[in-house]
Image (cartoon, rainbow, N blue to C red; front, side, top):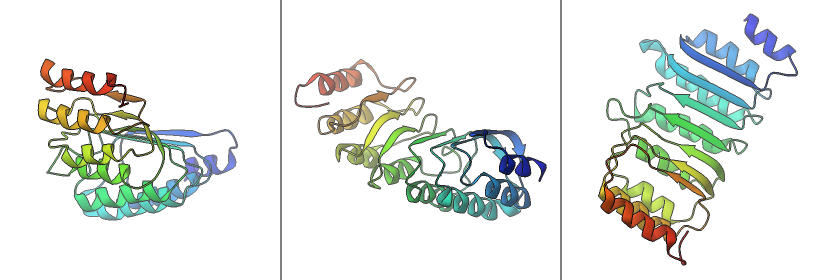
Amino acid sequence: KELADAIQLSDGIRRIDIDSIELHPSVLGILFQAMEGRLKSIDMCRVRFPGPDVVECYEIIAASIGRNHGLERLLWISNQIPSDDQADLLIESLIVNRAIKDIRMENCFNQDGVNGCRALTSLMTSGRPFQELDFSDNGLLGVDDAAAALATNPQLEKLFMNENQLNDRDAELIAEALKRNTILQELTLDDNSITSTGFQKLRTAIYDPSSL
């Protein structure tokens, strides 16, 4: 409550870091309401939600993000999303809030079968312009739909897909998408399982004059 009051009284706070803590619905309701319209960046790392309250916690966060039109950047790192339902709720709030341009969701989809590719695809096919999407360390196995979305030339400048166990087949799909994409300026694929064969496909796509 004291932190929420301080945020509302301050004209200088533009970013908040919430790290390594368990948050209950009562706290989230107070804190996120106070942040609306005041913060440009919310960084949440290694945050835990009580099991019985996890659905309510995501509902509070998603509702606040959707109406916080001062928010430009969300970091959601190592906060394990428990189900596709909660993932959909969070992703939809990011799509609805057209002020948000940068989204980093790292190490949060690769547990219990939660589909990170589905979330990434939803963002890229939303029609929303984004400067940066970072989906590193999410176990993005089978990127067919995400690559197909990239091929539609979404309004996306930077895409990070590091540490996702991507292989040569994934690289080939991404390479084909790049041939049709004229907007993406930066793609990072560090620490995957792509061999020289896959990287050659990517190089050919990048340096083809008719492509990116």
